[in-house]
Structures are given as structure tokens and as C-alpha cells.
Length: 440
Image (cartoon, helix red, strand yellow):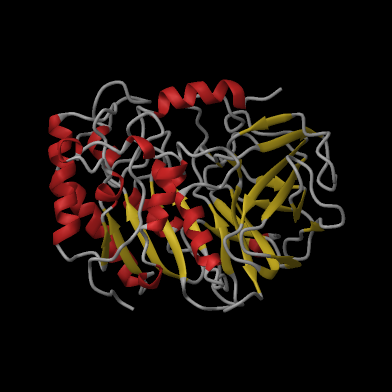
């Protein structure tokens, strides 16, 4: 049975209550900035030794979250037992070898991975004949990841092109308990009973869901411009996460940005670290740790990153009202939200990473809109535009807003997914097209 049908209507209703704003694109206005086994396991609070070495770059990534189901059922709270989970992701950059990153950040017990494969995607849960590669972890086919830890597989020869979809399959023989996952994948994941990690067709995968489980990264090596520090991370909330985009279409704005790089003949690593509902200053049980806390573990641990795009804050502004999932979070003042942005900037600069600030996008007509909230949004946007504290600025507020001066606080209908908060595919495309590739 599929959970996706019931999830769609619930999520589209619920999403109007949740997050917005984590988008970013950049016609630049600011100036240039500063320039498997136990051995395979690393604690989440540190970067694994050698992680940035060997020419590895991010092909795809997502931010892990604690088990939760704020809008519709998923598999995170029950976890897995004698299940095979198959997940499809698209890499932004190609290479001749690959490895995966798995996270047990929110697990309460050690996580046993009995086996894993990577393959080229065919249709649905099927993979291309002859493309599957067994993955190892410290030369072993299985591994145990401690509670709170993460692990990287060994690299395997695996030729993959930029914008190609790959399928990662995990066999979880032992009971896992509640699973570290990512809520809004805008992509279908598949589950089968028993061990089907090497299946070519998808016939055994009779259940589907639209979240990602344990898988937090696919890294590539040996491709063009190996070892260069030119990766881009998009950091934010649901708009970065791609809420409102078409499922299984890779139309989130970071996907569209990756397509623009590929069209130049010089693909670059573009990694999506948005979490729907996420805030800069407050933790939210269903929407991840606050941005100032997770920035280190999610962004600064990625290899080869030179630029991060930040669009986050609308949930800090709107999350204090009644009717939001799990109840309201503490009210956030403009000064506190700006201080949160400054913390993100300092963290990035300490690692020599350029930071691009994106203005908060229009919300009029949405659940989040009120005159008081609009006053806060305008004040934060004024600071982003004029303070000079970001290395560069992209004005996505104006890029997505209705050009009619009387409707300047409203998203242009052609870009609106329908909740007056999240863009549709056309809106995400406009965001990516607004980016100055040379400024990244």
C-alpha cells in the first residue's frame, strides 16, 4: 500500500501552516566575500578524518531530522525490521567513483546496516541492469552506526554524470527502532519485506513513501575539477526544501541551479540543506534544530564548499502564532532574528566560506500573514539589503513578488503553488534564473 496519496492532501493543507521562506538566488548586490566498521563511523559533531580529502565532493545531500509525522504517516516512528529501503536521488555533479553518507543522528540505539548497494535508476523502484554496486564500510559489507553517529561507505568505481539519478538501497535486517530521516523529500522512496538489495526490478517494493531514511549524502570523486572548493550549499527551510514543487521532478530551486551550472559545461556541487518549518533561532520538534545550531553539522561538514546561500527566518516570524504543528514557538524579535543571521555569517566566515543572504519572500494571503508579521519581514529584509554584512545579497522578495505596486507583498500568482507562501515549479525556476553564476 502507498502512503503518498493520503499524505498529499494532508501535507498541502498542513504546509500552509508551516514553513516558508528558505529560498535563495542571487543577482549580486553586495561585494565579494572572504575568499563502516568502527573506523567508518564519525560522531555528528565532528568532521570525519579525511572527509574533505581525496577529491570527494557532494553530489547530493539532505539534512537529517528526528522521527516525527506532523502531517501524514511515514516510516520514521516505527522504523524498520527485515526491510529493504530503496531511495532515488539526483546528483548535481558527476564522477567516476561514489560513496554514501548514512546518519543515525537521532537514533536512540545503534543502527545495523546489513548491506547496501548503489545503482543507476531505471523507472520507479527498478535499477538499470548490471549497474548495481555492492557497498562496503571499512571493507566490510555491514556496519553498526552508534546512536548519534554517521558513517561513510568506502568509495566504489561508479561512473555517473551530472544530473543523473542514482538509487541507493539499504537492507535493514535487524529492528532499527525510530529512524533518522528527512520529512519532505518531494521524491518517492520504496520499501520491501526481506532482502532485495540486489533486485534489478522493483516488483518486491510494494510500499512507498515520500521521505528519505538514514541516507544523507551521495558523494562523487574523480570527475571534472576534483578537489576544487566551489561547492554551493542552499541553507534554509521549506522553500529550499522544495515544498510546492512537483514530486519526482527535481524542480526545487537548488536542482534548477544545478541544471544551470551543468548547461555551462561546468557542473558544480549544489547541496540542499533545507528543512521544512526550520527556524534560525528556535528548535521545533517536527522541523529540526534551529539553524544556528545545525549549520555546523549540516553545512560546514560538507566537502569542497565555497559558498552558502541563506534564506531563513519566516518561520521565526510566523511560528509563534496558534495553529502551527506542535504548538507555537517563542516569539522572535527582529533584533534576535538578525543576531541569528549574524551567527550564521560568522560560522561560515570562520571556515572561509562566502555567504549570500536572500530576502524573505512574499507571504501576504498565507497563514503567516499579519500586519505585525509583515512589519518584521520588511525590517529583516531591509537589514539584509542594506547592512553589508552578507558578502552578497539576492532579492528574492522582489523576484517573486507581484510587480503591481499595490500587491508588492504578494507572490505573483504565476509563481504561487496555491498557499501564497511556497512557489510552484515556475517560481523555483525563476529563483534559480535570478542567480548570478559568476558570483557563486
